[in-house]
Length: 196
Image (cartoon, rainbow, N blue to C red; front, side):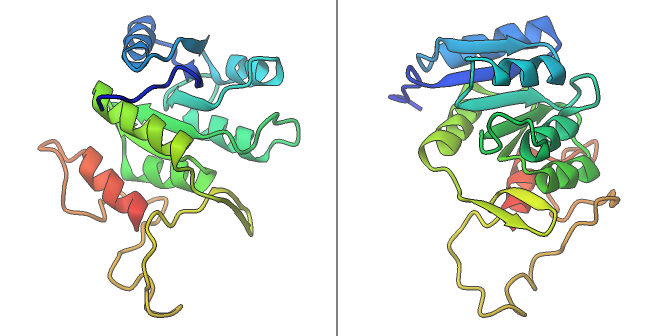
C-alpha cells in the first residue's frame, strides 16, 4: 500500500470501543488521512452526516448501537432524510456470521472487513470505494452498489450464477469452504461471496 494518499478523503469512523477507534485512526493516518470524523453510534453518525461534516466514506462496526451496522447502512441508503444515500460504507466485525454478511450485502454495504483489520486491508478497501467505486443501482427494494464486482460474461440470464451457491439470509453455512478453525467466515471467503 505504499503511496496510498488519503489526505483529501474525509472518513467517518463509527465505533463504540475507544481502543478500536484509536487503532482505526492510526491506520488511516498512516495513509495521510487526517480528516476523520468520530461517532460512537449510528444516530450520532447520521446526525454528523446531516451537518457540514459529510464524509467521503464511512467505516462502521457491525455492533454499533442503537441497532447494528446493517440497520445503519439501511438507514443511510433508504431514509428520505439521508443526506447522502451514495456514501461508501465499509462494515467491520470480529464475529461475522453468514446471515449477517448476507443482510449487510442486501442493505447496500460496499465492503466488509474481518477484525482484526490490518492497515493494508483497510487501505485497500478505502482505496477501492473512493478510487474505483461501483455504480449504484435501484432494483425492487434494493438500493446500493452494484453487487457485480467483476466484468464477466456469464453466458446469459440462466447461466449467470449457476456455479455460485446463493445464500439465504437465514443460512448458517458458508457458501465457500474457507472458514477459520472455529467455523467463522474468513476474509477470503467473505470476499469470494461478495464477488459472486
